[in-house]
Image (cartoon, rainbow, N blue to C red; front, side):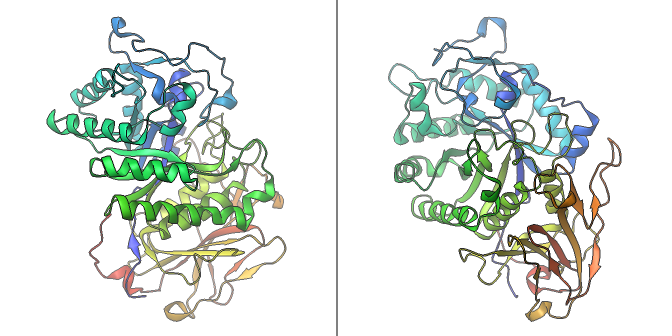
Length: 481
């Protein structure tokens, strides 16, 4: 192939921490843990998104007199179990809570150690009597971060159409004006920082597409990227088979295509970002969203997102809920190892694969130029991402064109004992685990002959073709990223 389709952001695979964690006083999440820092650094470079429903209930408290001003949208408090941590759709009964300078400092220190760029969600629900955004308190947080030279970027509000159910609707026009206001303040006050939004969800519903179109008509110029949220299913009532059902996986193709159509019409030149995404909403699916089987939804999503020009994909969550990349004990889940391999092996340039957008595929294949930054591979190498969702049949990948006859380095991920609900994952037959709290494993491949590139049933992996010498991966191309 002579030219890549396009190039994605170098932070393409990114992570979120739900602001719910801060409301819950960082519940179990020890940012000073050496192990946590080691695991986080493995995913750098990345965005660390701080957001979620609770962002629209957060009041920055720099001094004691400042505590909890602004009208709470609800005063009912509800005790929160661990399962609620990181929920993107929590109970309707919410109260305001304080974020302190110590919280902001802790986030920033963690992000710096990890090599993450912070994108922080500001409260859009604070409204003046005339219905306009009351930015007094959120801007105090922005000023604090600027004073400390934290170099944060910003979001404003979370899933804005859902604010109505908390008794505070913000329509598309008013949300757009709020973003315009924030952009002007950032520019004129020299506070700086990128601004992305509007973090809309359920993009395939007509009401949502109309809302997004209306928002972009007002504020498309004020944002650097258009953020949307995507989940395949409800974590409370999904089955294990849903995670590798082609009809479920194909929803991603349809939704990203809808998003791209809206952006090209209403904010031409902007890229889509998946601002929050995971397998199942409602905090994830018990014994599934943190197990091997979740890798089908995660890896296929990464493949489709890159192919359909989503510049960044932010995983809900790094920690929290049942879909975290880390467990409650701060240990890596199978999706963590999958993410680590993706970071090591997959470069920014996306290559064309025949039928990659076809619906109903049981063998799902994507290709990128290999990441030469973190590996010993040379420019020209190609990384193939392959998922086999057949339940009984192994698949042999046949290389054609410039890849024909070339051997590959296999990075095959399979569940221990063939159990799709395994908490462990094996790389080429060896269980992946930390060497110690300071040290990630070496992630060594197995060389396979060109005629023996096989993906067993219900498994997935990466195949690097070191000698591909793909022109798309050796030439310098004028591509934005």
